[in-house]
Amino acid sequence: MLPTDTIFKSEECCQKHSSLRCSNYLEGYDCFVVQCDDMYCHTIATNNELCLRQWIVRLISHTYPNSGERMKVSMEMIWDQSDDDLSCFIPVTLQFCYENCCIIYHVTPPHNFPTLSLQNFLSYDSVDFFGFQMLYKVRYLRQRYNLAVKNWFDISCQVFLSAPALLRDNVSVPLPALVSMIFSKVYVKPDDFLQSNWRLSKLSLDKIMFATLDCFFVCQIANLIKFPLPL
Image (tube, rainbow, N blue to C red; front, side):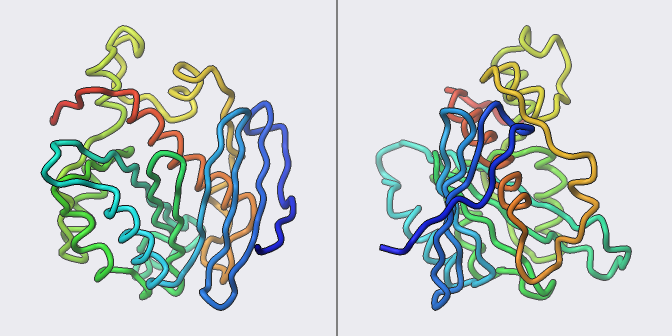
């Protein structure tokens, strides 16, 4: 068993949250256990496309195409807002989460985008992808990489369709507000969170923390929606 050590603690994001880490340098990834109060997420952070591909294969192995059951996966991207070079307008992270298992793929350098690994995954019949601003992400992937996301849902719209009274007729509710309303938890990110440099060779601990929780909370919210309706 690889050793683990506490790497992050703070009281600003949730009432209580922390991370544990172990590393596999030969395979090129770090493993984390991210805690927010009584909720836990197991996260892999990597820039190794083979590692992403293996994670996807393990995930798909849990599906049964003929059963009629669908898998809900959250999907998020982060762009480095500190980079003014428009030619590098490529997401610096891709995040996927299923139940309490998350992967953060660090797109560094920018040309290291995992197109081949995502082709079949994003178009898989039995997987529904949830996230914020999904129309923008779906168009971006189609236009830039010719990747088609077959089944996708905007989480804000789905929450609104499922419980309009909860959002008081406001479709565009940010994630921290949804987390507060649905889970009664305080989820706050620093104002300059996205303004720091995400293109560094290794993501900092706070970036791992918030990139994980963004995707994790979307997945938890999606799992509460029994009958998502396409727009």
